Image (cartoon, rainbow, N blue to C red; front, side, top):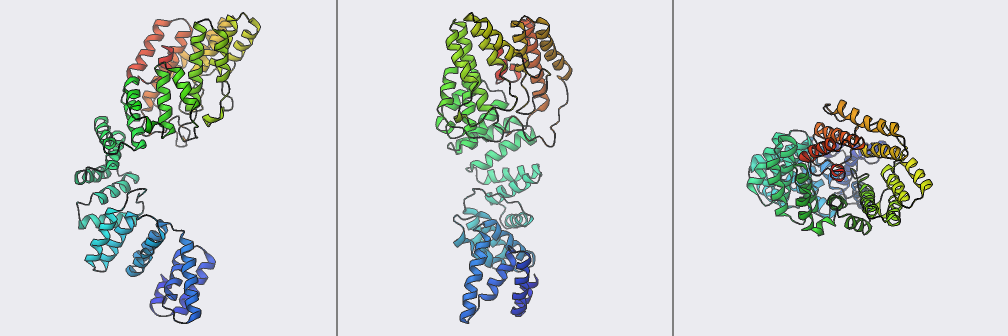
Length: 496
């Protein structure tokens, strides 16, 4: 501000000195660099014209072609009432930014209105409204004020309502955000993203899955090539209890989208496994190179092991132990294309248990005993399954089965009873997510009912414990209770 005032008073030498002192303190102070551009812009002497070119080049190098840097500097000028300077900053954007950015037009319109130039303001707002919406997510108080000003002039601006809804939702003003998105939808019902945003908000903030489903279906109808929306629609179908058959049918109608995203692809593979199409699931896993993603930890490798283990079980049923062993040994080693290694301390209890069964069929008793011993090792204290690296209850269940094979019924029953005891003690706990919970087992598009998830987990534990003790009718009842609420519970499907 002091530099700008000195420049406006014609005290350029003092302004230049002050700017250079500022840049010594902070070499990336955009305002000081820009003030030098403005001071030298009217230069007439050859040496000053050369200085003008150097300051312009230095300024644009500092700004890095980042539209947000230009907007933030314009906001600084606007906060001082220096409307012309703010407009000057934004005048550079067209030559520096590859794609028009909506908020530049809206901010220019606001600035021209402050100067009383209504016609130019109208033209800039028109440009902002027409600019691509990609990656536009206003987040500053200045942008909030600009969007409010835009709607005060034209309350039927669908894009301004949409952007303001984004701002409000980010600041936890959910009901106001939903109102603006609904207004945007009323004015322009053809924009898919506003329907998508409403779908998430209806489910997560209003607890209206019916409205959420209608909104997401409309979003996908409007943009049937958006793999992200398709993924979120499938996640909603899973949330509200659509069957595996319904979900896989829809996914296979849009396989080009399924191939577009790792998370969608692994949902499809998971559904193949749940339907018993284990060979197809394994084939699908072999033909894709996966990449790590937040919330995806253990998903790909889990389906890899499941497919091979279930195929091996079929070979054992047909008395083909050599083929079963070949599959199970593959399950112990994760190929590079899965994009994830084995967690430290990860147990392979089910795999070693069935390896032991294969050796038994071959009458290789010593090898069978060694495999059952490996299957019996590991943590045997049940825990919640809040995080992806928590030990699954199957590990303890297969420890128990291994101890049965080793002839130690006491150790086996200890594990089965631990599963049942934990489940009965914790089934109706009230669960709260820890503030630092960064390793959730899912990328949560929709808010999870943690109490329901805990009840499912405990019922599953209890079912496995009962199954181990031979109380199969009670175990089946627990598994059916799980599947009534969550027909996509893979563990319940497999063990039923």
